[in-house]
Image (cartoon, rainbow, N blue to C red; front, side, top):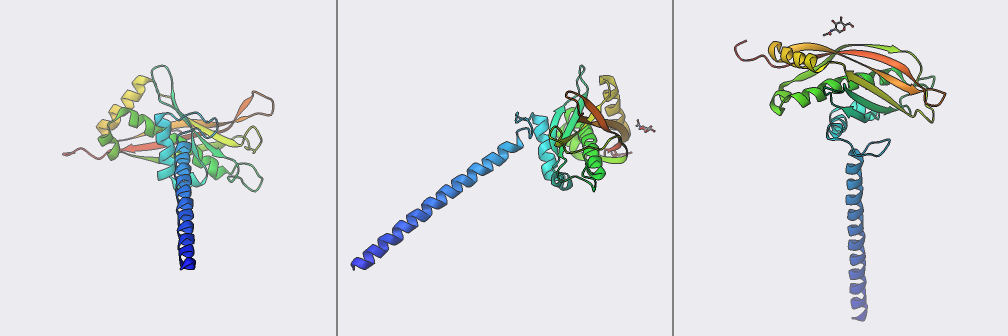
Length: 226
Ligand SMILES: *[C@@H]1O[C@H](CO)[C@@H](O)[C@H](O)[C@H]1NC(C)=O
């Protein structure tokens, strides 16, 4: 009888301990999930909070672009075009894991991060211009691209991440004309160019390592009756 009670109480104790451990584990799991979510809304390098449009690009790469995600590409900075400032998208990619036989950055990975930054530059500005309904009908594809590899990109302490930046060079009226033309013709192209800069050997010098230009094609479904 005594033995049975004691064994029952032992069972209860171990059950409680088990529940206790499970509770702590699930608490830790929730905490780590929250941390993961938070890390997606913070800048990888400097830890600042991402803006809304930066969060959109970060999530979009994570969810919709598996090859880019595997290369470690994420958002660095996004600025939407205004009357005073040109728009740009900077994406970052670690050199580690993206190297060639010489140990410098792999040309194919550089091409990917460049073309992707050009694509997002156009896409975020369309998002900024149109409502959800029009956006959902729109297709943006890369038609061609030119890339000029000017210098090798080495993995150094100053330079662990490659930053590719594409610019929307249009003035306000040029952007409006582009959008108007697209809405009327339902299909048009747009050149977006950009660069990869690296930190030079001497402090405070940056040099252009890559220049690129992508021709993007934007399509909308034909209007009824056309
Ligand atoms: C894009 O650039 C190419 C030259 O690289 C040029 O031939 C073409 O006309 C340009 N397209 C647009 C839409 O500006």
